[in-house]
Length: 328
Ligand code: ADP
Ligand code: MG
Image (tube, rainbow, N blue to C red):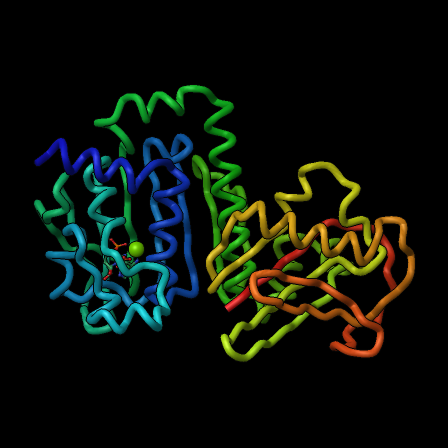
């Protein structure tokens, strides 16, 4: 059973990035407004995610890391209206199988926080009082200590640095889609990235991508009934140089489906094609109105002059290559 557990867990937990994503999503699911992520040695020695969420109820702590335990859904029907990132109850248990895990948690009802040390199977081996405030801190030590081949992947500094960059990009995506969240990312005690609480998506974009990027973005909104689809996005102003830049532009296109960042090259390509067809890179015309339409599986982007929301007060200036799109 140990080998089976290790093998299946290593399929769920594949990288430092993956651990950070799972822990951070648990924090967001717990209603946190503040998330601090600390990495040591690029996450190989330690990954710590601390939040100020609702904490884990005493009754749940003994099973929190047991395979398939989740407090997020109770019935099959709950799957229909899922409002959390997690629902499978797989992450914590899987991380336990490939690292040394401890959890400190405190709910509103608890007088003090408690630290739980977990074993490879996700069971609590010991516990002791701790001093942290409300919320949860998960520490993951010696990731992939029992999977030498996985760990070997990280022997080159180049790979480690790439991974750190990916973690940062992941946080940027969540920071944009969840504006109210405050984030810090620390590596070897140095803060490498942080973002304060923002009022809305535009402010979050401003905080993550910078003022020059946001100045050239136009908000777009589309609502379709039957089947109900809500599309919200920010697109480069017509005339902006959306397509002529290098492949790095792809990285700057953020797409979310139900608040989940997705990396769908097809969607990016489609958006790009429609956008460039409508607005060739050399177009300098100013079309202030932007509209998004959906036809079956196809998405069309158009900016008719007479319809849509009039959102632009500024004229198109510097070219830029960001597009942010969210759909529900
Ligand atoms: P899932 O997210 O699919 O429910 P996980 O394995 O990620 O499964 O987490 C298991 C359970 O542990 C969650 O359902 C939740 O009850 C609890 N939990 C994990 N992390 C946190 C956290 N940061 N705050 C509150 N509860 C948490
Ligand atoms: Mg989870």
